[in-house]
Amino acid sequence: MSYDETEIESSRAPLMEHLIELRQRLITSIAALIIGFLVCFLFAKQIYVLLIHPFEMATGLLAVQKSGQHGYFDLLLTLLGVKPMPEAAAVKMVFTAPLEFFFTQVKLAGFGGLIVAFPVIAWQLYRFVAPGLYKRERNAFLPFLLASPILFLMGAALVYFIMLPFVLWFGLSQQIINAGKVSVEMLPKVSDYLSLVTTLLLAFGLCFQLPVVLSLLGMAGIVSSDALRGARRYAIVGVCALAAVVTPPDPISMLSLAIPLVALYEISIWCVKLIELRRAKEEAAQEG
Image (cartoon, rainbow, N blue to C red; front, side):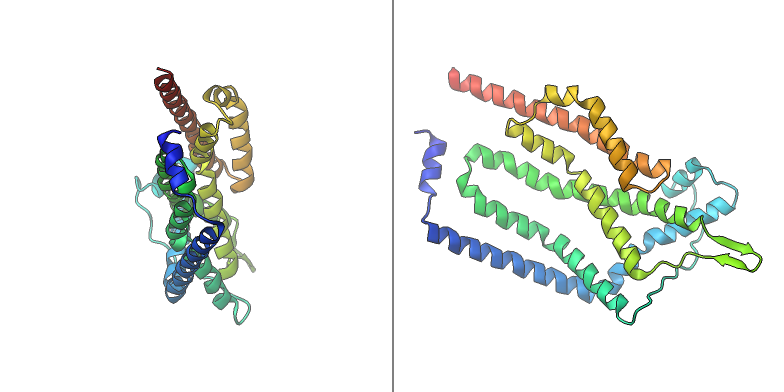
């Protein structure tokens, strides 16, 4: 019996002990979720104002468009800070039901509480399954546990600073103003705006998990680096189709998701290749 097998045998426990441990970790996770919800609800208005910042950036892009610099390249340079952003106009939102904004804050607190509590929940899950893993498997799993939230935050940052301002600018540019007695203005509802923000954040955050998913599949032997290379052209087509569905109908928005996903796919190929090289080295060492 190898050292890893001996370690797993020594960590075995009766079913009742596993159930008790599971209950304790569930209680800890639920407590973290409740605390995160309460904290986010207390600061729900401040968080919502923070989420409105992309809307303010969109009004600045609209000012750039009205100044005559209406090309996508000019807008992108302004968004990236290369060109100065004009002063944002006042942002106005509405709610049409008496308790709509209250329930919007509840939804926001739930979404924020889940994000705040995720590290605790993920750690509790890892600690529950870790005794059933070999030591090398535990060591291999930890980097993915750290990489997953980092990649999610990268996707969320792309949405917050690039995607959302372009989406909202596209909506604002459809307005009809100063056309005689006709006026068509965008006055987004607070609930609809939150739904748009959370949908895009989740979509991009989950899409950015591609290297983690493919690397785990590579560790399990389900995919190989050669197979991923062979499927590259199909993956690019799939990424472009996904970007076209998830993002608004403008080329900048689609490319802002498609290009990072293609780059992450290439990174995934190298991650799987490194996993294969390490596995081959370990097998050679065992046979020697």
